[in-house]
Image 1 (cartoon, one colour):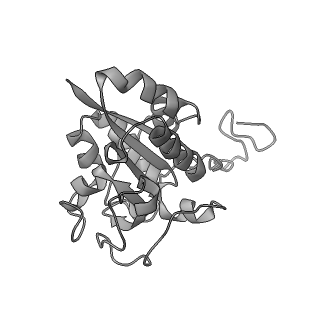
Image 2: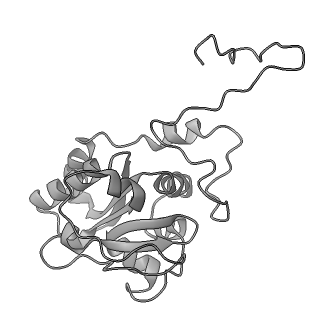
Image 3: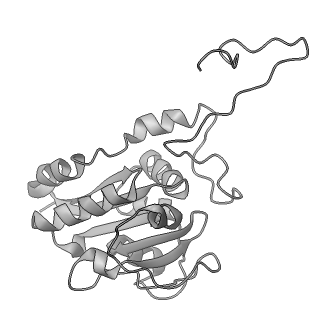
Length: 214
């Protein structure tokens, strides 16, 4: 039976955590689920019960348990640094793809792992940028029979519309750049857009006058 990957990103880590829990409750094996979340955003979420081992070190270093254990995916969550993305907390099959069976330093990027799993290049680039900027990504390996049920469960928590998020990056965004320093260009749901200042004659570009909403 044909198998494909369904991926959805959430701006709130707790939403992603709820999705994982609900997927397992719906009978999806935790071995077919993966979670990759921005470590800083996860740390801001109150009331999480999963473990977080280690502290952020060099890019590419595996810092904790990266693959889920036998009692549920979230029980196996651990810390990892993905090249170009930075510190994340993660568990599941996608992390094994990133790290080469989950052991040693991360050898590939998130975009490559996602496209290798069947996610489109455009979508994968948005997700990599989103995780770097504070998002949480849930991916599920699913057969055609279960696809509709999985989509329904994942849709309850209001996942990001990746095409709308792509548009928010602007027409000059050409895709995720793992070499970009810091978090420049990243999107967060509560980030404010930079407003250009006045020109030499004191006038503003149409639509950017601070006395008016963008």
